[in-house]
Length: 134
Image (tube, helix red, strand yellow):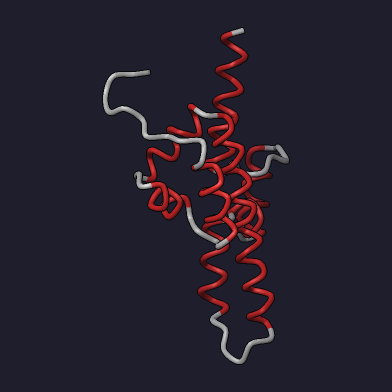
């Protein structure tokens, strides 16, 4: 383990992350529920594969929570669609980015790649590191 503060990671935090995701919580809020800063959550994802998998699930559950809220809002008397749109387009860019922006990026890069989320980026970095070690 690198020098510095000892990690306070516990395997139980996987379930905390998933439970928070089911409530639509952000990565920062998951950190708060675990008693650590958001940066520590990213470190734990790099250091603990089971936590990375839990965070992937948590992000999927959070997106589903927001999608459910949006569907309910469509039939509600009062629903601020502008705020909802801003939230989902920022938190879930790969699914809710402005189509013209995604199209422009695709044309410029000449690929059909989907933008990476922070969690996906960490998973890719870990996979590349493992390849180079073996």
